[in-house]
Image (cartoon, rainbow, N blue to C red; front, side, top):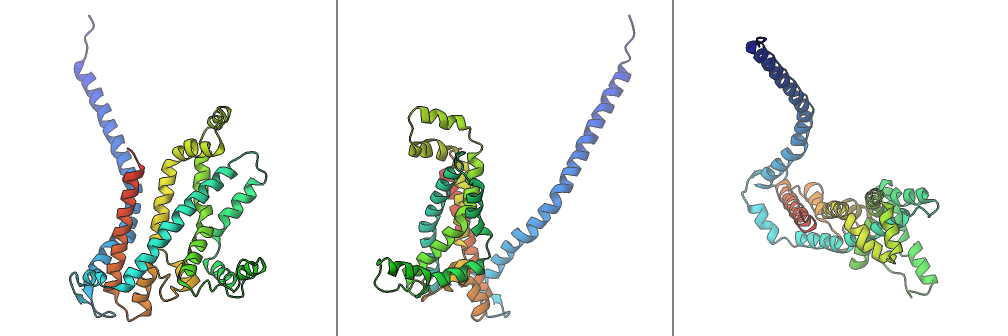
Length: 309
């Protein structure tokens, strides 16, 4: 019988194991080389500012004359009527604008996903274009359209729908309606793109089978489209909620928080505390940290409710 050199066989297996370990180590090092720069940037521009903001929220004083004040800034929030007003305004935008925008974006995505509609690319671009439009430009146009002698009042007067021009920007609820219209006009197309991407991943045969079975357009929307787009709907709802709670641009440029702080947002109030009033950076940081917690809690609740896993 031929002799088997077990020592030689073992040496080969050990060398192969060493080669495998060496390759895996190289792969791990390459992976960490890609991860570490991004992790450092995330820490510097995300986690560090959060920690710094919390530390700043524990300090009181005006300007740069800061001193440790403990939880005094958070206690002040309870009795701050302007903070309560700004939070109330943001909740109104959240409860009214976000459902309208999500529903409208879903309907438009369903319509523009139909292969039989002509000029689909034109309509998709036209609806998406507002979110790429300059904020200042569209704010100026909106303010001129909804002025006392603007385009909207002129149309309503000519149609005999109103007897006198409406002071859209000068009344609390009409000014809030203007903010809701501006947000809906600007961000509906942005959410529509997400739904279009999701719809294109759904097999058209499912819709054809539903049509053969006699399902109406509403049935196809509620029983096929919405269930299959549920993860994307959850994503856009979370992003829209976060964006609405941190709204600043529209309230600053369209109404400047007026009239009488009826459209003031929390972010605009933070801006005023930091740069328009006598600077109270500690108190502004406390409000910012409360908004951060509120956004995180709402996002977790939405994920908990929306994701059955």
